[in-house]
Length: 278
Image 1 (cartoon, one colour):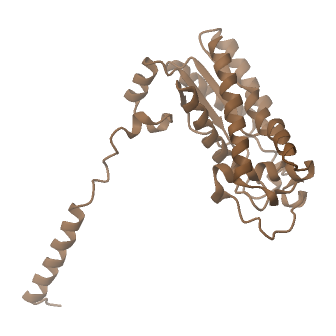
Image 2 (cartoon, helix red, strand yellow):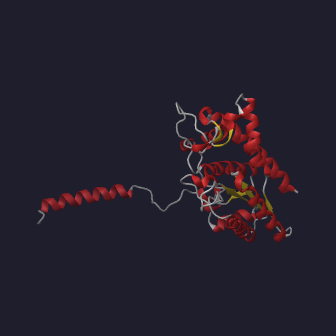
């Protein structure tokens, strides 16, 4: 269909107006000045920025370990990844000389044939223990080659603690003092026994606090990633068939969780300062 001269002029005017508006937008490829060097996350840095940070003394690298698993009907599957990301960043920033590797999200969560443990619930992702151990060791060796002298494994999930400790022990034998792999027990101890004691001091019972997806888990999650916790108001009490073990999350709050986060950070930072100074 033919377009009149008047129509072509109108279309041209609309195009130029739109182009002028686009020209006013900032370039999409332009990163904020200084955004990379200010971050403690390895994946936010260029290789030259990382090289300079290592040369300036940032030779401690924290490897946060999470997992993708069911946590009942109220907490999202990424709980451990979200929690360890927030808490590990606070630990790295408090230490002042530490950087962070990307969160390790694929961890042992049970068998698949037949499904066992958390694998009985949709969304949980598992890997064989040996694959997990070798992944940790390979990542740590990569970091040592590039100049890291202390590689710290922070595991947010109790189910793979022995696997992480095994990886660290093998690395320390291999490195023979040229570098050190650390697994501070204070991190997990503070998030479980320590936070449990704190909650009991506040009047909460053991059958509320729970061992998985109960009040303790929900409170910590509300403190670090509130959008990942579904509404607990007027909910029926969940049980083991729902993936909640020995607890009741319904009275959880972000304020309670923040006290737990502060405890984990404080105890882990103190332990790492002690161990790295040796």
